[in-house]
Image (cartoon, one colour):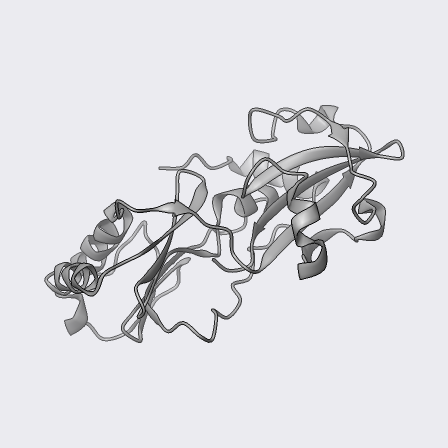
Length: 235
């Protein structure tokens, strides 16, 4: 289980970094029909942690064409499944009995889409054992041919700070070394604050400033400091 900040940490980070709101899930690509999708949400939490942990974005997507995207060990991975692998996974899920359930619309921060059926619930209080078993199957599913995946739509998260000292206790560890923002990329001071859609023409240049995806870095630009991160708009 991923470690979450305690309420005091969340409050402190929210006050210093940005307002605490979950990352909104955008529509999925129109040329790929979703067969299975599972999304974790958190109730609040600071935006940097949500960004790096993929909160509010699907942790698992299987499209009808066999393209599967999984968020594991802090990174997005993808593979292409054969039809027999898809059939085997669906059979295992259907054996839980979940397909006999009506749609679940409970208050909570998780969403499961399965063959067009939508189930919303809290993973801390599963409404039915078949839902719990299905989530276990999805979380344990890991094809052998996974490779790193970077979504087409990315978000750049930018927050200026005057002093890093108050942040050091709460920033994800290890804290990256402060480095200069490249002069070849649009100035951070002109990009705005919060979540910013990365356009195609500047995406590759911005990603060169980070060590993989998702990732966060601290940059200095004209004697100003910026805590920044790149995260998914949708995987």
